[in-house]
Length: 133
Ligand code: 5GP
Image (cartoon, rainbow, N blue to C red; front, side, top):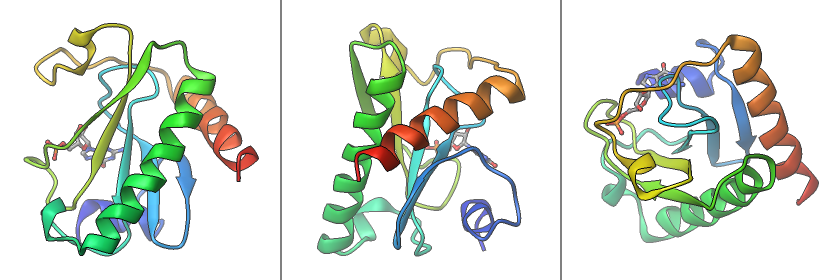
């Protein structure tokens, strides 16, 4: 079981931003920016391009609606998207609120926020996501 499957199962806590039957979104614990969110399929698949065509399409649409919610509640020019997957063997899309191109550089030092700030951020994204359903 991957660490992300354990998050979906509730065995490991996460700052949940959105969820539906097949996908889950939560704040990255080592964020590049406030609101940096990971979108994952509940089905455990390592490499994103091993998802079925339908799963990948559905995951991208889910990520779109999470990105819309992020942009509603956090100051940013756009929400950038990236796929790396070199650390955790469970497919995921990074959504990062950007003020400039450099904000999507994964070599940047990671930001630190208090648990209260992380909770408030996740709650705000989740409220914006849920209100658009
Ligand atoms: P990647 O696999 O795309 O290179 O990076 C994995 C990402 O997952 C990293 O940005 C890392 O901070 C994040 N991450 C790793 N473990 C956890 C975890 O237990 N909880 C959360 N919320 N994020 C994690």
